[in-house]
Image (tube, rainbow, N blue to C red; front, side):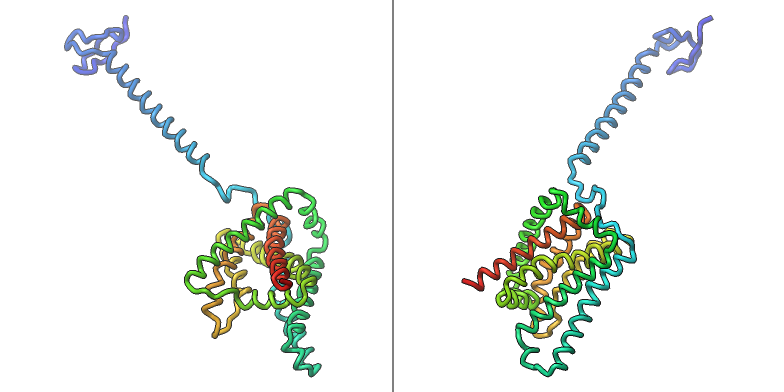
Length: 300
C-alpha cells in the first residue's frame, strides 16, 4: 500500500508519488521545489550578508584591539608613583624655597639660577625615588629597553607626538596668537642658561619621572575602574600640571592647554599599546627635540 499525503490544494488524500492531484489537478512537486528554492535562496542571502559584515569588521581599524602592555606593578606601587610625582614635587619645591628664604639671599630667590637649581634638584630626587619604589620590578622595567622594537616604536611615536601637538597648537593659535605658556617659557629660560644639565634633566629624567607618575601611576589606577576614564582622566591631569593658574595670563594658558591634553592622550595610548619603554622613548624624543632646538636658538 502506497503512502498517502494530502493534496496541497483540495486536501484529499492521494498517493505520495503522484505529481498531479487526480481530483483537482493541482501540481504537487512544483510547490515543494519552489519552497526548497526559496529556502535555499533565503539561506544564501543570509550567508552572503554575514560574509559582507565579517569583511567590514576585518577591514575596520581596531585601535584598541590589542593586549594591554601596561607596567605590571601592584596598586600600592602605582599609588606611590602618583604620590611621589605629584605631592613630593610640590613639597620639595616648597622646602627648597624655604631654605633659600631663610638664607636671606633675596637676590638669589628671583634669579634664573634659583629656578634652575630647584627644577634640577627636584627631578634628580624624584627620579631616584621612583626607582627605589620600583625595587624588585626594576629589571622588568629595564628589559623593555633591551627590545629594539621599543626604540623603533618609541622614536616613531615621538615624532607622531610632535606632529600632533604642533598641529593642535597651530590650530589654537588661530584663535589667539599667544606663543608658549608660562611652563614652557620657564624651561626655555633655564635651558638657554644651562644647556647641558637641561638636556639631562628636561630631556631624559623629566620624561622618566612623568611616565612613572602619569602612566605607571595615574593611568594604571584609573584603568582598574574604566578604560575611558584612564585615558581622559590622565590626559586632563597631565595638561593641568603644565598649566599656570595666573589670572593675568589665563587666556594664553587655555589656548596652550589642548596641545598638552592631546599629548597626554597619545602618551597613554603608546603606553598601553607598546609598554612604558615605548612611551618613555616617545616622551624623551619630544622633549629632547624641544630642548636641543632651544639650545641652538640660544647660541645663534
